[in-house]
Amino acid sequence: MAVQVNYQTTAVIDVDPEKGFTELCPNELPVVGALEIVPELLKNHTKGRLKLVSRDLHPPKAAWDAETPANMLEPVGLPNVDIKWNRHCVLGTTGAELLDGLPPVLEYDFQVNKGMDPDAHPYGIFYHDVADTKTTGANEFLKFNKIDTVVIGGLALDFCVKKSVIQALDLGFNVIVNLASSRAVLPDTVDTVIAELKEKGAVFVDSADDIIVKNFV
Image (cartoon, rainbow, N blue to C red; front, side):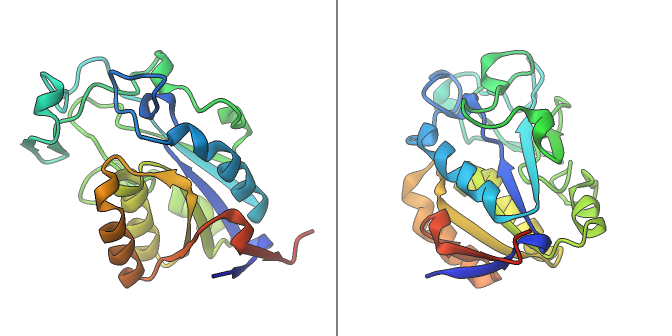
């Protein structure tokens, strides 16, 4: 299904497109097919006037660190840490770098660095806490620039992308998710995630070619 967007009022969000979520860092959180999303993320960039990126920039020791891979997804129970994860995307390591082929961080119009505190592991781009009360400034930046639509891709579909989509919808944005520009940690959950987000109002396209731009200047 093709969708039309107004270039002037559309922004593109790359959620956590980092090497820590790829096979380049096999001991972190490798997502099958993650390296394949770069061309589609770059195509997304042509669909809107502004580009935003979020990054997990984690400390070397954190409350969510799993003792072994077998402990991953176990509950933690802290206010801002829900479950355990393999150590990933630690500041200063390869895992925290953006995927090769993407623009340097400073070429994006806005960046969000999240999960920098050892007792807070947020997923979405818009808030620093799990309860969605501590803003990262991304919402305010978009509203100030008169953005009403966001095109979202990145890693991973079933966690940080999903949460970012829900937050964007709750904040009143029209949300388009390009499936070709995202991959899931747990591929078996994809259909459920898509159904849930569609019910909340998100629009899904199979590729960036399905996003038709008007008012490009």
